[in-house]
Length: 497
Image (cartoon, rainbow, N blue to C red; front, side):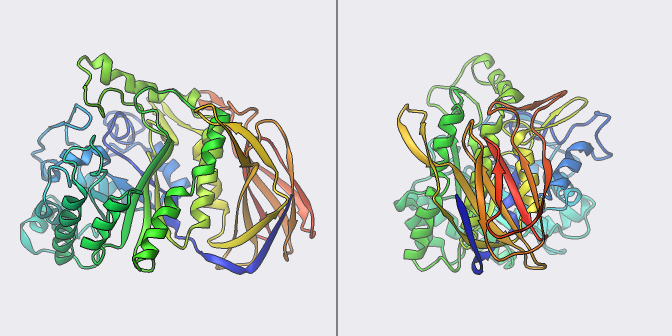
């Protein structure tokens, strides 16, 4: 197989926010995760220093919060100031003490060095409540909410640029779900009020690949929106926790771009593709396990709906399958950088996240090292690339049907500020090494940074690091040189960097 790249054929400049993340008030993501009062590893604001350091290492560019489904019954005013009011979270059926609210979130983002991205309550909330939140965060001194922020000890505005109107309000499972007609009107009025408070905000709203929903949304509020939000969890195991095996996950890699292409087509048809970008602001291979909550019949005993969530903490389940899929999806985001400007891995801490916390430390799961690869080794100019004689492999999907998929998945990049190339390469084969020939005009030394593990089932856990980032020097570049790709591997080949 030979890879051909022409430096002059650019797809576009990648927005660093495609490597963004998400954190929700669910299970141990906030409480007992990044926010852990009383833990010796926490700082003076009760944030875990080891988690912050891990997030800084992968240069988290943007962090979406507080939900997710949680936000659709969340009222931000109860979680600022000294007199916090606990809430019963109607989405996840637990009490939230509200000790981690807007100001704590902003302080966390500052320590990480990332942009805040707030998702508002469009379930039980109102356009006024959403715009009041923007007042609190962004106005200098005008109005009661800016004054309340100042009284709470924050003289300077938080200056939150990115705001989402609602979460998955199209779904029956969402508190305050809406019809497509209702949604279009609510988003329009919410966006109008938010823009009247701060015209420099950038707004997104919940969408999906449904034509009727999106047309109603864009006809009513497209003039106010900068982004359109889509979500996807390919292995939908929220109810049964029945993990797809490695082979079935490779079948899912055939679907990494289908939602992007559908939404791209609609934006183009409506003449909005130059104005509105896609924010893929919740995504992961596997859905979070929370049985008997997003169902008509609710669990009665906590053993039915609450305690099973602990199974999300089983680190043995986050293997090279998750890493390979994650790399394939990041490749898809790069290849579509002209229309996708933001994406948020869901979540970053605990549950299905790339960082797992326990009392005495953290575990960096296989997916963490994928983000390390892409954030720290890939370029920002995405190039058209063509792979000659691509091999195919046969796999069986989760339904037991046979599919064919390319054995390699590739995204090629260059740099806007220096010479060189960085090529992301994924070998999906579970057992066979593959070789890739490089055909491009380049010079300089070649380095290869990759993860592969010793099997498809390799994972990291406390005291067990089977998936780590490896580095090798391949010598000076020569046209036609061949690079060996280990099985179940994700890597970045750098030339002349």
